[in-house]
Length: 367
Image (cartoon, rainbow, N blue to C red; front, side):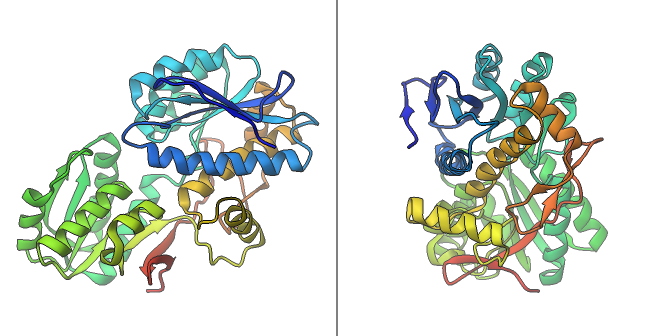
């Protein structure tokens, strides 16, 4: 049974499944704050993975545990808690944070200590550049946004684009825009928006009035829902929408307005892959709901590190060696196995999926 203990405060830690002789993975993530929904999804995936690993014998015969640190995905808080993880000798690797910016703020501390920082959700292509102990299995935005722009080009000649105003959003939009221009897609309107916006009408009215064939949102799930709800319910836009995220929150917030939305993703519950189906079944049994991308990536991160430690050693050095040498990490995304490109410290030859909302759920999009 997994045991959890929590304390209050934005930089508090909590231990799950951990005992004095446990092997621990440190977690920096948004338990509270603006991105707490992602923290909830991550935690579901983390806990399910630990349960699976320990049921299969743990790590080198020891129990696997997690030590949580709530950063609210704020770069200042991530940087502040990093020394606490480094100082804990039971922690053999760190996963998180939610945003690439927050992860990047903590990475130098982990790099200096020789502690692997596994940014499982960090899609900024520049994230691993801090050093050789900084890795990411996430599909980078330079791959995602090429795929995104290419599918947009099959549905629209003229588009309006709105994107989140942060380093990630600006970088992601840059990749999208470059590919859109190569495809000959005309961007008739573009605007950024603040992450905490509650009324996007001032930028969406001119987006609608530019008469695009489609509107593209590059950002997160809640703002993706705000965009499409504003367009459909307030502004009467009925055209194609590319935006949102593969999360229960997006589908719940957007409701019927999400129907037909197309995104790039990594995962569908309908995959016939045995590992995917095992994960989906276990997740449904444990939580009574459908898993999404963020549940899966969190689950995969813990499985990856445990797999690595079981093939080398349950130490900080063993985790680094595993990421450098193992070429058959099992993929829970329906792609067989994967390995890391040692130059970029990202997954070699990643394969994003195109997903569309159909009858209130994400399915593989067939163009």
